[in-house]
Length: 233
Image 1: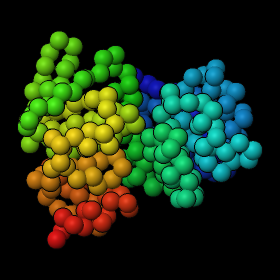
Image 2 (image 1 turned 180 degrees about the vertical axis):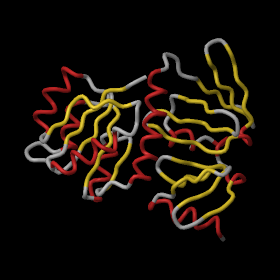
Image 3 (image 1 turned 30 degrees about the vertical axis):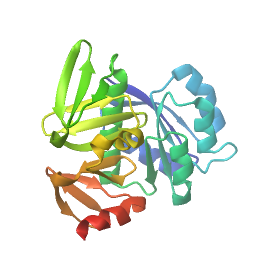
Image 4 (image 1 turned 90 degrees about the horizontal axis):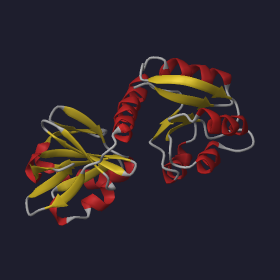
């Protein structure tokens, strides 16, 4: 699948930078580039892009207000110079929040999450989840898939979905990661980021910025450094 996207930024160099970065990912196609939110809003209704790359500090209507007017249908990635917009952006159901200047490695990580999210959206049926004592049952159509809780390596939040990652496969459930972690069955997991929770016994290494599980590096969010720090004790 190729997904249409638009870029909104009032700085010409930043627009060109984002466009060049997006072109490296063949699953995306840029169908519109705008220097203000009003022009973008008029075109979004016509072009119906799947992905929005939005600056926040724009003349007139800002990027957060633009997102609020559009709704939650499209995946939205905010790209800004201002860290203090982070909370507002996630309140508008942003898939990611990137700081300028764009870091290629961080952008690549964001594109992996974006592609994963778009693929989930594309699927007509979503898995249902039922909790057992030490297992979960995931319903896919008429089939029941049984997974031992101890086999789950980590959880990844993608807006309203949660991806359950085992050593061999990924499963997607239409359930918020915060609500999932409230269940007693998931008490052996620790939240390390607003987008990730890991199973404690799979942790291989902890540094100041990331945790290694099954040779996969997952970021540690600022708000979760204290709880992660307790593991070191």
